[in-house]
Length: 111
Image (cartoon, rainbow, N blue to C red; front, side, top):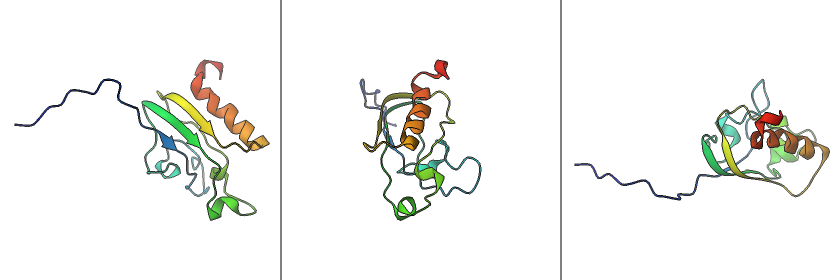
């Protein structure tokens, strides 16, 4: 007989960290639904804890002309609820544009 366990009240929702690992080779490379752009190779869905967008330090992202997924992302997910959002502390004009795009997930009515 299988053992059934009750759901744990107050369980912490999973968190996700952007890796930008997908090569920018076509439409959708920077999409949030693309699992290779997330550490752990799993894209966020449903209710999540924190989405983290760190400064990317891989060799691909520190070249003179890094791929777009190193500094751009596209929230193409629907029904995503995020408790918190973190980004790197270094701010450039690209970071500001990314933050503006990311904030659309917090209040999609404003987009």
